[in-house]
Image 1 (tube, rainbow over the protein chains, first blue to last red):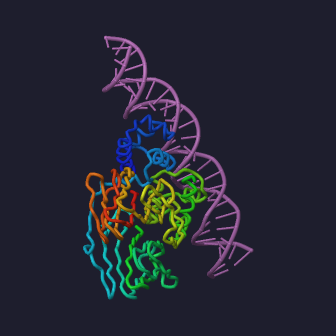
Image 2 (image 1 turned 135 degrees about the vertical axis):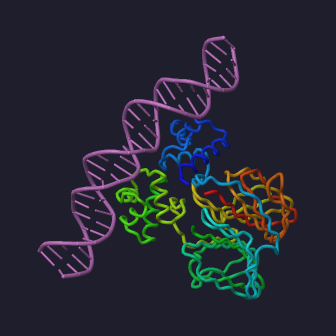
Length: 182
Length: 182
DNA sequence: CAGAAACGTTTGTCAAGATGAACAGCGGTC
DNA sequence: GACCGCTGTTCATCTTGACAAACGTTTCTG
């Protein structure tokens, strides 16, 4: 799929949603309406400044080029989800991203009990982990530089090195967002 | 910040990371190395086909343009973070990706007290919200179809329609991951 | 029914991006 | 030293994106 086709569709969709005419959008973005017309026709090869101006005027993220499909809803009750267990831990995936396009983002709920620890090998290069502590205290992070976190603490660290999750208190519940590179 | 500056930095960074020379990348992307040279110098205004070719050759997500300077690790203690408050609620951002347009994923910790509700207007098309309940019970979701959630429940729903967060119990603490389209 | 005011399209002009060749700077090899 | 292979840069040429103006349509309004 050529990028221009995607832009054409996305542009039409977003402009319709914003309820703007070609002329109005052109003025707001500081572009010629002929330019927008041709882009929506799937012709041309816009520069990023042009796209930047459009995205800003429409107030959409730059990645709006990727003609995104309408999202659905998912509900995972506590205790459901795909368990990925080991001794003393309950790592449960609530959202496993299904393939391309775009970067993969998985979400986990992570229960640790009584000083149990989980070693994690290095994930693919560029992986980033986001952790928020829900309850309890835990030592989390790269193996050589973990941080002790309490309820509400947020910690972001590279996931492409060996790292550790270790409960310090009786129990600890973490919210873990894993962000893989494309 | 002009987009070209961001691209210049990002391109240098990614190319160095891939260990490619200008000539090598130029050949792999099917571009002239002079083009790449000028882009890295922060000059010009590349077309999306050019950027697409670069991103494909480097095998990076398209949003790499936005100099996602790796602040490798970030630690936000509970109570820190940027508060976005309204009556009876404490919405606190722990991770705000900087500046539209671009691929954005924001993380929030969200405290609701005593039946307080927060109405949220529609976010940009394609936005997806992920919610995990830390404690208490809350009614969350699109305004016309909210779900009542308890501790540990995970709920994913579209953020591009009007939606609501409402505490059912005394207090409720939520973790909210907002995912904007790329 | 004019007439006006929008809509989106098409066209010619000009500025600017993309190109390839020629360039200078470095490090190793015979 | 002379030669090679590589690095990244600068330059003239050609292509093409962005623009304004004019166009044909449709829609509202007096």
